[in-house]
Amino acid sequence: MLALALLAVLTSQLTPVYMPTEVLAAETGTVSGNTTGKEPSVSGNASVKEEEVEGEKKTDTPGEKELPEEEERETVSSAVEAVVPLYNYDVTNVVVPARFAVALNPYQMPIWIDDTKVSAEQVVSRNYGIINKSSTDKLVTVTLTVEDLNEGRILFVDSAEEAQNAGEDTCALYLAVVPADTTPISLSANSVSANATPSDLADVNMTKAAGKEMPLNAGDNTMQFYLKKAVYGSVSGNEIDLDTVSGNDVKDNLELKSLETNGKSVTAFTLTGSMNKNAEWGKIKEGIKITPTYTVKTALTSPTVESGTGALYVDPIPKFTTGIAVGTIQYTAGAG
Image (cartoon, rainbow, N blue to C red; front, side):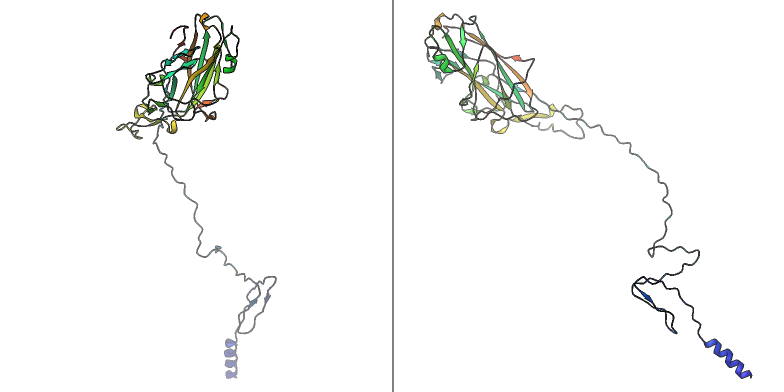
């Protein structure tokens, strides 16, 4: 009996005890139950939910740990300041002729213009240059104020044909200003340079722009030129240094290097015309007076230059309230 009891106890210790494990299957999967000696299996798309041990918090990604809140950090601001200058070198320098020489020549006598040129035109004139040496593009307005010194006995007309076909008792005068064409302007045999002076510009070489004559009448007559800026550069040994230059005006550090290429900062004009040959001009005791005034304005945009001219700008002339009278052209009848 004792042997049977011991065998029963030994047999009970050797018999395995199975504990079911909870398995959750996906909707499309199947779950196999417990079988002796095998782990439960999951087929299809299934997931197994493991029980969390109470008091233990799991993370989604292995190895991740929950970090403590970021500690407040102290911020430091810089006390460095910089005063930024606006470097300005605005230079306005437009050079115009200092003198004029014009003659009315109704009977077409030969008149010497200079040492080499003779003209027998009825209106004899030198050519007058204008140079923009400024640091910005400029609009230069030339106002020619014409006055008849004979109490209106001279009749100003709008074409050479009208002057030539006038009656014998009519002292008709076609007087016109003509801009230069697109060919370069020169001083004698040399091109106009940045060193040209007002005296130089009183007698330049230019070619008239064909078909661009502008008739002059008694009173104010205006024409406008668009001239490109000149080229400025640093004075040798006085270059602008970001660390040492103070103030805004740096003109003393710069100098004129050259005019704009292709002659776009240089132009010229001249006077031409025709007179009634049949009129008794000897009865005219006085001539006419022409007072040229130049006004300069910075060009904020790039205007379109009249085709066939070097710089003539024909949009409406802006109204100016001030000007500088540079010279006076006066003709006296009978003066050779």
